[in-house]
Structure formats: structure tokens, C-alpha cells
Length: 88
Image (cartoon, rainbow, N blue to C red):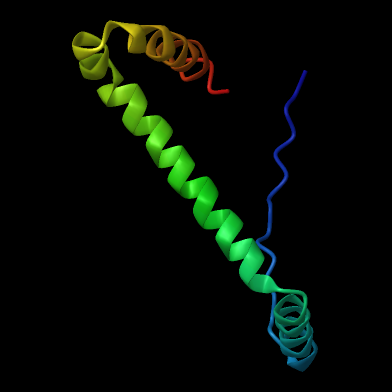
């Protein structure tokens, strides 16, 4: 069985006036519909994700000081040990 090699040509998108007009319309529509809400949601997700990672890294130290925090920290660490090697 032979494997066929098909050369792949890169697609070049040449910007034109229609693309600029469409981009301006999207930005205007987002601004009119309260685009700031999306920015607030994005920032909130980023902050929560950062706090989660900080808890994974530093939660063990907190568990040494306050034993009851180990019940919060261990499931988080277990979740990362399972999902990160699986590329999930």
C-alpha cells in the first residue's frame, strides 16, 4: 500500500475593503450590545483560573497550617494529576 503525498499550498488571504467594513461592523455591534460585559467575563475567568493554579501550587502549604484545607486541596491535585498527563 502506497502513501500518497499531496502538497499543501498555504492559503493567502488578501485584505480588502469588504473585510475592513465587516470588522468595523462587528466592533460597532459589539460596542452597542455592551461589549464591556464580555471583557469583564474574560477577566473574571482569567482571575479565577489564576487563583485555581495558585491553590494547586500553594495549597499544600496551606494544608500544613490548617489541616481542614487538605480536604479542599487533595481533590484539586488529584484532578490535575489525572487530566494533565492525558492532555485533557
